[in-house]
Image (cartoon, rainbow, N blue to C red; front, side, top):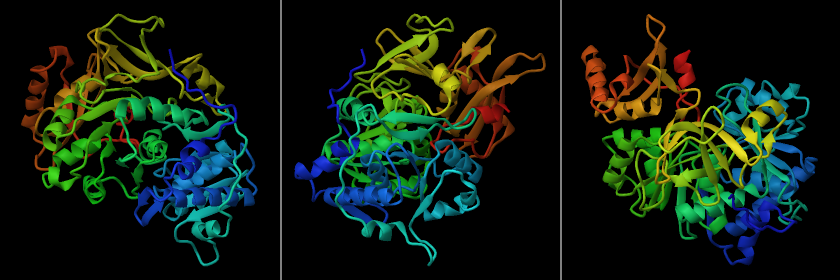
Length: 516
């Protein structure tokens, strides 16, 4: 059964994650380190209060939305928790989107205030004047002489703020889904959702401690990154390292080394990129590293094994979602099975069901359903998709999985990515993992492709490592490599070499673009 924590009826998440640290004697400890400096827990609490007072001064009322288009810096947690503390609803959004995307989100969320990093302002400028709900724009960073920057506006506010009388069941914040199959969906989460992910996953699976220094390549606007770099460290009183720039292998390793991080959160493509860089060694990172986590997309077995051999730290692969807020299925420290996503996180229930909605037998492919206490309540103004995803206590993930007799789950692909070859289901991820084991392959994506008889067969798109050249002979070599490892009908009938694969901002391969 899902495990719900007992919370008081009057509950505001900012009390737990921000205010209590002062009373517990943690005020002088470093809460965050960003590209410009550091911030103690006492300074953070004061900054959050100033942010809440600033939003109130702009006329923000409880339950109104505040859109956050902000790069990872100390300003992000200040504005996020400041909004929640006054009962408003922060809506962090992807910082890599286009102007039309932001136009949609501003209108859809009906945000009355936009908090935006200076580097992103150009994408908002063409649409601000036409917004029907937006009243104020607050800019973090460099601004024109006629505009007051966020830092100055915060300094003008009081560092004392009364907490809004919210409950665990009040809407606390939204996160927009990636929108890979249509318009993004505003996923509404409660004040109580965050602490459940912290207790059930961060404490009971990851084993995060107050002494930890954590760094996440996944950004704060992403559900995975928000837990990794903000809510998890704030839950235990640890220190989070924030980086505004794109997480390239060299930038990531520099942060790990400079701050001697103990926990690192990445995605499979980044782990692969670091391993492929011949200039990066174990000494390039942190000597204190004790945990590595991967999510966003299933971790190929070969990458996990090579990482552990190179850096001496196992990767805990897991799966979460915007709807469930963080990881609900994960490998455990000391019990990692590479190629598997592990077992259910304590407090979450899982089912693998067939097309008839009934549970399938162990070893059979089906859709993964999850039930747990951090589930979103619905998608904003989208009843049809809410009903399709949220079925009472169960949430449909859209992921295909196989559960073995030991309770370990193995990823088979997205429901809409599966291939039926000769009447048999084929997991694209299984074929991709076989290709990735080849020493010349950096990345691979497999999709369905029809032959001249209109019969579906696997087609692979392959990115080679930098030192190798795409040659006709390599196609046959890779096909034989897969045939030696998988059932013959699973090998890719076509292989196309590409410079890069289309991905979402969070590193997921967009196979639908390859199918187009």
